[in-house]
Amino acid sequence: MMLGVCEIYSDGKFVKGKFNKFPNQKMIEIALENGHKIKMSSEHLNFVMRGPDAVVEELKGEQLEEGMYLPYSLNMYEGNGGNADLGYFVGAYAGDGSLDRETTVVFSLGDGEKKTVAEKLKQIAEKYFGARCTTKEYDDTKLFTLRIHSKAAVGLCKDFVSGIKREKHYKSRIFGTSLEFRKGVLEGHYATDGGNRNRIYTSSKKMLETLNMLAATLGTTTSVYEDSRDGRLGEEPNYSVLVYQLNRNNYGDFWFKHDNKLWIKIKSIKQLKNNTAYCFEVENGEPMFTVGTTGILTHNCRLRIDNREQEVSA
Image (cartoon, rainbow, N blue to C red; front, side, top):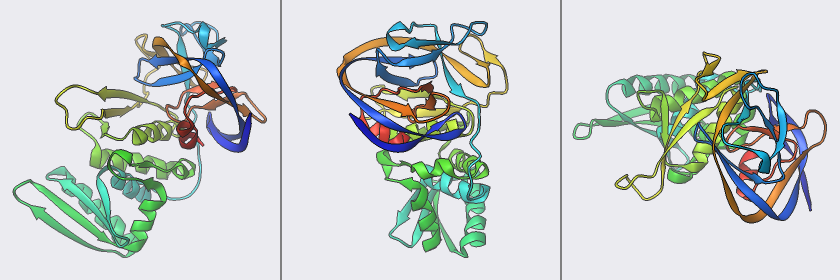
């Protein structure tokens, strides 16, 4: 069964293609050393290396082994629209913001360095939206709120971020914005929802997946730690996301660079129950595209078990 034509991100550009649906496929799950997982058919083709001095091979899922490497692109997507300031505002909203009806963006920030963040957000709001800003401090919690009274600011946030709490995530349109806008998004998100080790913390799996894709458009990838320990806040997992800086050529046998790609080691492979798979067929050009939930580069025939993944990727 063939589905409609759409565009998918691939190695620094967007490519057109179609999805094909195949029921009752043997499925496997590949886990990489950076915490990423990809589900595929045992027949799905992959670009694979066995080490930094090996050649690139094309292997079916059933031929993959622990210790092999799968690729991520190091190419950035240039895109267009927006600038670093507006990107910072959107990223800060994604990290620690909320909306008060259709008129106000609210940032709930901590003490200390977060006041510097609040001042920057206030300057951006006044410069680009002509907004009126108010703040309120809470002595008992060392928290304070910054309120940006502007329908334009609300509109900007709603253009690029959807959902709240565990459903909050970036919309796909953010991936086509300018490079400086997307870099600003990451900076703003770090500033409001990041820790002291350059990590972003989120309880939203959708946010995790769109952060992975955002990193892919910036020519890098992420390392993900999933916290499912007993005693954590809430029943669902929490995620720590580290965006790689990639200022070296390799990191032990964990990953290495080759042919303008980052190759990350397969940690484990497990069999799954048979399920429906979706194969993406690139219309023209190199038979390769990016898996939207992780940023992994894979072969022309993309196989997945969940239509929600297609929605995120496309």
